[in-house]
Image 1 (cartoon, helix red, strand yellow):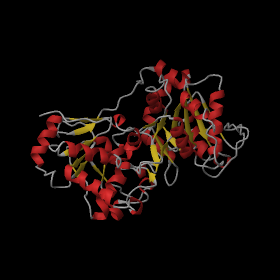
Image 2 (cartoon, rainbow, N blue to C red):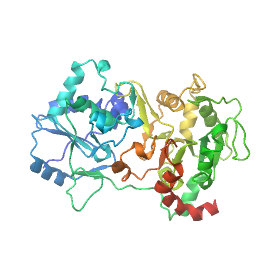
Image 3 (cartoon, one colour):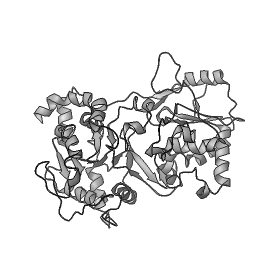
Image 4 (cartoon, rainbow, N blue to C red):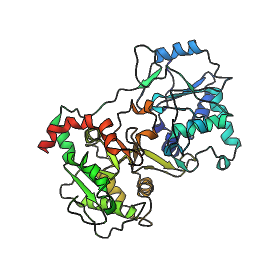
Length: 426
């Protein structure tokens, strides 16, 4: 069997590479390849952390006997929502009927499906299609599957057991998630300590949450951080909080406060390499965050890391941004580059959504945005348990209708307890 042709999205036209994560812009690339190679019957879309077993793939082709040239087929590891969720525009499975893939396990599109979808996009006025994500891009797996399903008039995702979340001895997995790796082990205490000491964590809060959200922070992850500062609309020695000069407290958006924090970060005498910006209702593991940061601590190029969302990116325009609730990680070089723009990345208004504004600035400044599939903008119930069980989450967001202490205990406490000895040294 000849090896398949591999195309990396980093090697395609820059405008397509930027928006490739939403999947839709890649249909043109797929169509061009299929027209050039008439013998190619399938397109596999894999993440950078997806492994593929070509021997098992060949066996699956023989087993299932699909007719990809004449049959529109959409294969993946199927997920579905058990309840209405904000990350899927408040859809749920009972209402939408959408089964969507776990993109980290990969998806397979038959030749006919790719060509049919390309034709559909060309023939329709996409701006009038309510199923096309022309404004906000949140979960590309769901948004693409919903468009393909077309309210039951299109093609439903077919779940294959052989498209796995984890390599299995009992299933001949075609694809599976590469085992999660870390650049620092818990046993490497000095390395973990060095990373934490070289990281500044900024927490956005306000006075009305000092006795509620901040109590959760102070009883969970807050005390484990050697360099953490809580930024509020007032100075409160009990927390304690910092009120930066000239900042304006707003009910939403918080752009003014966030930009002030970026300037404050560059003025710190310790000159930390990394800035982590979180909300007072972000729940995360310091240990897992540290292991993630270890992979980037020595990176000299600018970058911003977290869960990537987008605005109008699927259309080929717009901009991507790192959503703030799950946490935003900045390299020092990224902050310097953002603030070196002619506009200094100034906020249009104090309550402009800060994460979206930073995304616009990042695109203007050519600062890469890196996606983490382990940092989550919403609560655990907003994601399928079948996905979370294989992701080793780093963070969640929101206290709404959940117990944040239980979220921390269930997902993060066991990892953070392994920092116990390190905490005393810090």
